[in-house]
Image (cartoon, rainbow, N blue to C red; front, side):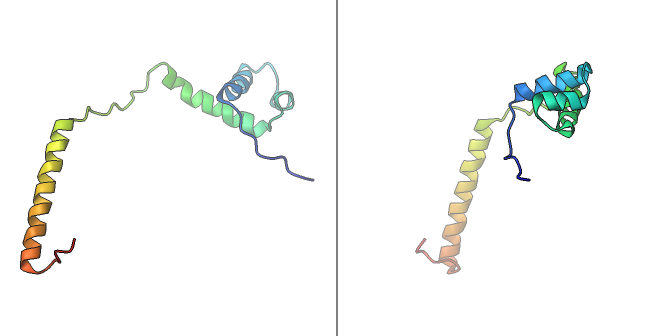
Length: 101
């Protein structure tokens, strides 16, 4: 018995099948035969739909990242670059680093 190549289903297809499973008009084996997918796959899609449905209505607080202060980051980069240049010069003078860089 040869195996069927792996298929990728669109999000719209998964949603349609999962919603049909949630409705419960047909049994899982009937849905599986109708849509040509394994019943376990339908169960997984249904569980994903139900677990993420709460987030659709915004009851879960989404972590909002704070705005990045680019001026402060650029200032820090300049300060660190200056310190690196200074330390590189000091190491070269001390003979601990070659000047061939």
